[in-house]
Image: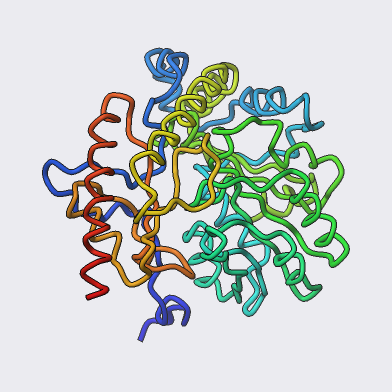
Length: 375
């Protein structure tokens, strides 16, 4: 028999990122957490200028490092050796987990949170445990509950901010509380800011990078910048931690064209504020058509994702939404929740009127589902 690692034999990866969703004809696909408004025009301009040598040669362009450092220069004193390029934030997760991947190493998170981090930690033989967010409190983050679980036997704490699936923000003050507690215990804190471009960069943990050597920040251009197809992201951390990561990663991560497009996006981030203002307005409108039967978890209105749940915990909200024309990510894709919950993404501006109609129809159907269950 082939000598496959026992973790791979014993478990199946729980991930919605494979995109294996059946989208019935006429339904609206609200599964993947991309920017429905697309990418900056300046990125497309770079794409149209592709040169043959950029295809032939290995990627060595360092201008993208300068773009990252310049982008954060008002918040952190970053240099090239503080940055590692990655093929999006999932690749960053795999790299960071390999820093701590001893069998039985303990990592702490909250639930629900990004399931690919959780699955990867478990597949590496790590002992992942979580603080469950309280349904009765609309799944709101509780910093004190997390602080109580940070002990010196942990290898790392993982938080996604904004949280995936709820879209809620952990404040900079709360992040610093976690960093301070973790530092005292010799524990690293991984801040996955995949959705961070939907909020002000002044809310990023990057502002704490100069003070806390136990901080690791993951960023991607897949979400806010609307560039999921080019697989571009980066890790920011102390030079020591980046040095360790460089021993376990691909030196050619992020192709030359992706590097150039990444730099162009960071140099033209002006449109992000416009998009987030539109998302905030859209979420207000969503709340107007649901609420009696379908509830929205705590969220930041600027993020394009949010968690919905039925007031009756026995109702399969995922199935109900599919029956009413909306395909979302089922709660079963995350720890600590089930298909009574779904993660939904806002639609494009063009599709938004129909999107609201479908949600309103689902709200009515949800009321009927609750009555049926109670009979």
